[in-house]
Image (cartoon, rainbow, N blue to C red; front, side):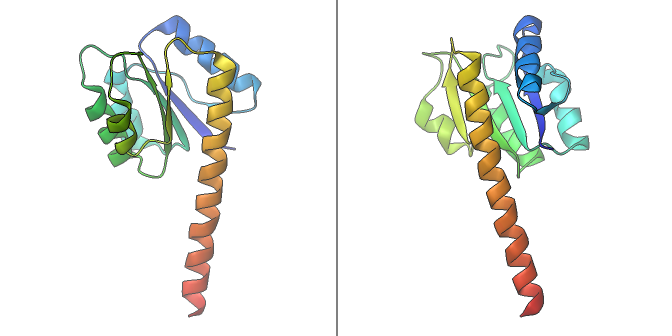
Length: 136
């Protein structure tokens, strides 16, 4: 089962996202605030990380770079305010995709499903390449 981490500052939104993803069959780890995310990302591996970049204390671009450094194989979906970020620059940070606030939870869930499908295919290709290299 795919492991999902939600990094969201607002408790109500965090719980809502967790509940919605769990209903769809995702294994959702407890949602957390950014201050605790670094420790969790260093200790655990995730398949999908959903991060709200509307964090006043930290630069969102730095958050995405840190996530990809600490959990490089994870797919990342960024939640961004409509006028807060250069979407081209967000994409260049190596994320799967982004969604603008306000958003429908069902849209984020569908995006999450597609991100996990992509990751599963990439993992299969990586495993196949390793297997083929062992034979050669």
